[in-house]
Length: 172
Figure 1 (cartoon, helix red, strand yellow):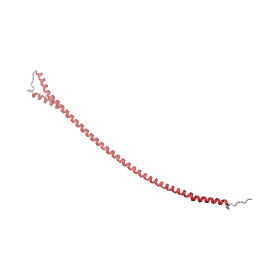
Figure 2: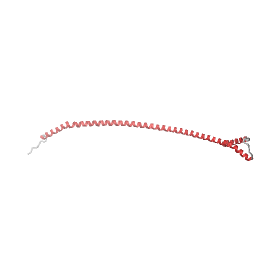
Figure 3: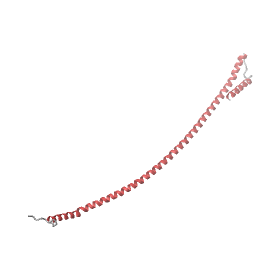
Figure 4: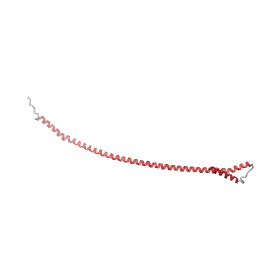
């Protein structure tokens, strides 16, 4: 016959198991849990400082972005001012060059007109001086005798004056 074990009464194995459990708990709380807690606390501090650094970096990045945008806007305004100034300078230079070109054109035209007038006057003077000789030659041939040019100088001068008057009317 076997005696039935009483379930509520501890036997010797129970005390051994209880002792082993208590030793394991003691060893765990004394040697294992403190380094784990220390590592977890250190890790929490690292995470907290990383989050603070990230927040600070985000704030700095936002400030830098705002500064970059302000500088970019300022640069755009300066670029517009520079372009406006360059356009106004170009317009001024263009107008100045046009005025210089027009003045040079007017000077060249005036010089050419003066040269043409001078050449015309020379041609008239040459023609007038040769006209007297030609007229006297024609008169000699028509009359058939020699005509003294000095004696008839008033007739030659009258012919030259008539030629100049005709030329003056033709120029108008």
